[in-house]
Length: 134
Length: 344
Image (cartoon, rainbow over all chains, first blue to last red; front, side, top):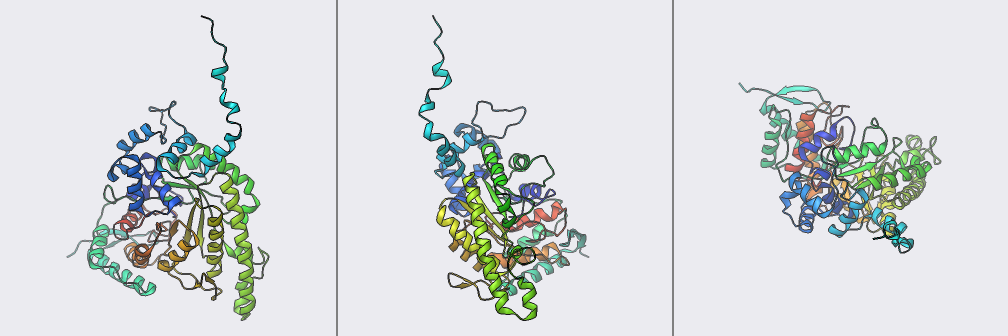
């Protein structure tokens, strides 16, 4: 609460005490706190178990980069290290919901909006393309 | 002769104090906070830990590796970088925020109700492009429902005239308006994909303001069992502007954080933010010790995560537009190492 106040204060808090958000597993632990009301240690333990890592690994950006990439939990794109073939934001949240076994509202809304006509759309462009004669 | 170290007053001013002077401030701040909140003062080991944090000339300090906490960045962004979604991106990708918040400069649910469709569209677009959990936040701001800004008689005018019954009736009517608006906005935001709602600086207008928030939270929780709900306080105790209001049989006026968190959890809150105001004439060390003495029982007895308000002017962070990193980092470390907070 309040660390988002303006003029750079969030930087100080993030470096002094923050888990690191998407650089690590901070966003995942935050989800368990806000959705399930888990205390910090409980949330960290839960996320570590679901990811198959140690609690200490949760704040290690090197370990978590590999874990996030392997499980498709979302990565921060940078110029030298882009991920065009990795899941985008909303796609990553589908994976987060599955890995953490926690409902994510926008994922459910996305499903609700897409599902009614999903079967009709299962014949996509690639499968309707005429076969190339041998 | 003791050498002095550079430290801060809670207005941000740089001063020099000896370790003995800092120790005295820590002990006094702890005692003052404990007396106010009817809680035990900090233990000797905790004061030693605080002295180690504050009796240092280091520009920056931090928690141990592996002991980090969660940052729920309410009010994410300065409104000075591109669009609001750009700022959310910045908080997620550059500042390491664990939980981010979409907000409007008119930070009141009453005002948001009138522009809800615009706000929900931004929430929907943001949810498609962000990974970090994203909540929507604003203030209950019960005062905005009183005349001349709102529909009900102004209790701040009625109270000095001794018209207590009318003042109480006005607040009770305002509660009904505020609950309706908060639930209305929450419905729109949850429909647009919000991960949660933040009721920030609740209790700012006293016990009726706090009651309105609790009633809104209870209704939102009844409708949406899985949505995140964060409730942050405006100050350290609930002002009794009404004086007789109760939530589930608990009188709200005069509640301190250890009891505030219990009624909040009972209503359905998943993250609670206690607020302790600073005394700008005292040192940051004094204010941090006082804050910790007040919130320690809250953290120990809470069934839900406790995210201390750590913005400017609360929790020991100096009340200045540019809170110095040396002071902010000391406050953050102290809150985790001594206070065992779940987040800030």
